[in-house]
Image (tube, rainbow, N blue to C red; front, top):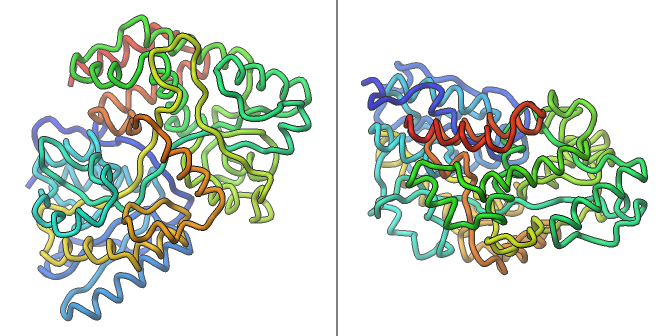
Length: 429
């Protein structure tokens, strides 16, 4: 069965989230998947410790379910998206696969590639935090189960802030730009950015759009298929103010996220004062840094600043988490496995090991990392929440948003050109 309804390879590339460099654990042929009780599981925890922890959970599930056998494929973020797209187009989705929910997942569901699991998830829905399944549910139908959650904010080097005379986290965009100027004057690179991967750059435009236009405007734009508004142009204009200060590390346009000289390593090695990134940032900084230690207690966190005169609240948060969807031909045990990993003890393992915020209410006591607690505290006081735009919107729109913002960051597109390109993609479907 081939994927239909106009789904293209480009449109399903979708979003990126957390991940580090890694390798393929095991491939799967059509012959290997012939067994009705073989579960092909694709995830993005491609390095230890979670690589081993996920494998251990699979082994424990196998022991409790005789005849079930897992074939696990662990992939780096971009490789995962590319390989998943290929399989989706061929009508051969894995039995369980990582998802961030939103527009990408819903388009996969529309194409008949994933199972609706509303009734099944109902067995453990009440054990999850209230908003856990929002990103995986459309029109009252649930197509995935959440595993973790979190938000994007600024991770900063307290020592470099002090050296530059920056008193503390800026509360406004004007104050943020002033902090950037002070850092530059002190000879400190203000911000590390993985320009090559594009998705980290879209965080800036998305947050500014939230602050200037507000959450309702972002959601209405998707319905109207129109981003050509004064507020969205103004959001891009605020971003050009930052770009004009040349705040990013040398060579940022060619930099990856988790590579040896990438965004996370630049911060983790103390070579840049800030990065705008999700709750996984401290772990990736540590693992990417030269000494595998990161910044330790020199690392701080603050939410994205408010924009003076903006319609959005400075306490609205942006981000998301990870979950798993079930492929169209998956055996019943695949859904049972999602219930298994949602058990509190298993959720605690991921919270402690992967440095994530669990969505299982009983597992919240496993959050002991001080950095993660900072994120949890900020998220707990948030007044609204927006899923990553390149996941919330239809795949083609999200991809165009990433591409256009990357052009703006490179000085090759104006704020007006950015919103026009996104609108064109939205109208074309």
